[in-house]
Image (cartoon, rainbow, N blue to C red; front, side):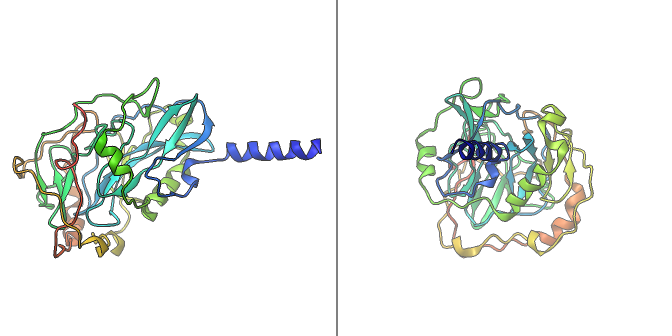
Length: 326
C-alpha cells in the first residue's frame, strides 16, 4: 500500500510540473476561476515595446503577457487578431497573487471590458477599461492617440486622449508586490455577462510561443527579443518595432469578417467630444515610439472590406466603458 501511495504521489508531482495554465479549457467563468500550479515565483515585468501597425481593418489588439509552461514563464507576443463577434472586446487575462501562490485568471471576449488585475498592458489597456477603440455602426473605430494604425489605409479612426491612463507601472500581476487594484462596479458587472473563449487563432498563438525556447524568461531574463507580431504566424517585431521575419502569405481567414450572429445588437453611443483625424498621435506601450505601417498598405487594400451590419452592434470601447486609471 505504501508503495502504491508513493507512485501516486510521484505521478501527481510530475503532472503539476508539466502543467500550463493554457492547457485548461476556458469554463465561461469570466476569469473568476483561478488556475494555480503552486507557482511561488512572480512573473517578470511587462517589457516596454512598440506596437506593430494594424494589418487589417477590424483586427483588434491582444496585448502580450507572461504565460506559464513546463520551462517556467514565457512571453506571449502582443498580436493583432480577428474578433469572434462584432461588438465584442477582449479582456486580457492576468496573474494574481494570494495565499503565497500566483494564479492565472483567463482572458475572454465580451461586450464590455472586465477586470484584468490593474495590469498596465499598454495600447489602450492601462489597467482599467479600454480606450484603444470602440464599435460603431458595425465597424471597429480605432483611437489613433493610442494604437498604431495607418490612417491612409484604415479610415475608421478617431483621436482622443480623454480617459487615457497615466499608469506607468510595469508590474505583471495583481497582489502584494505588484498592482493592488480592485475591480470597480462596471468590471464586476462585466464578469457576469456572456463571454466567448479565446479563439483558435489566439490559442495557436500561445502554443507557438510556448515552443519558442527564446521566449522563456530563463533564457531572455525578462527581455524577449520578439515582443509583438502583426498577425499570428506573421511578422516578428523587436521591442524597438523592427520587423525580423517576413509575413506569412495572406489568406481568406484574414479577411475581416467577424461572425455576423451578433449584428442584431445595438451599439453604445459614441462621445461627441472626440474628433476624427488623419494625423495619428501614438501612445506607445509605456511611452515607446510609433510605426508607420506602410509595409502593410498593399495587403490592407486587399482586405479592407469590413461588412457593415444593418443595425448597430453592442459593445463598448474606449469612451463608452472606462478609459483607464488616472
